[in-house]
Length: 235
Image (cartoon, rainbow, N blue to C red; front, top):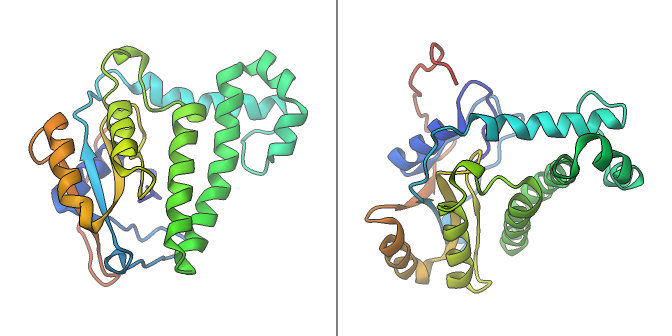
C-alpha cells in the first residue's frame, strides 16, 4: 500500500491497517489497481515489530532533504526526471557536495520510482512471482540505499532489521518481505505462501509477541473506509 495523500502520516496508515486487517485505498490515487490475492497462493501480512517512533522526526526529514540536495548538485530542484545515467556521470561531484548517503538515497529514489511502475505492470499482467521479486529488490534497496530500516537513535534495537532478516530466512526465497510505511520503526509487510502462513505467524509471534502478525485482505473497490479527521493534527 502506498500513501498517495500528503495529509496522513505513515504511522497512522500502519495503525489503520493493523486495526482493520485490510489494505487501505485512497481516492486520490491516479490509477486504480485491483488485485485478488486469494488467487495468488500467498497471504499478505503486516508484522508489528514494536519499534519506537519517538524522536524519529529528523530521520524522516533527512531523506527528502538529502535527495533534494543531491538533485540540486545536478541543477535540478527535485529528483524526479533524473536518470541513473545522470547520477553515475556526476557521482563524484554529488558525493563531494551532497554526501555519500545523499548519493545512494538518490539512486534509490530513481530506481524505486521505476520499480513501482514495473510492479503495477506485473500485477496487471498476472505475473505475481515477478511482482514478489521486485518486492524483495525494493526491500534490499530500502535497507542498503535509502537506509530507512535503522534509526541512529535506536541503533542497538533494530526491530525492523530483525523482522526482515528472520522473515527472509524463514521464507527461503519463496515469498517476499519489505519495510512498511516510512521506515525506521513500526512494521514490515510479508508475502507468505498460504500453506506456510500459520507457521510463519507462530514463529514471528515468538519474537514480537502475540497478535503482532496480522493477515491483510484487499478491499473490493466499492467498499469504503471512513478515515478519522486528522486535519487539525500536526504530523
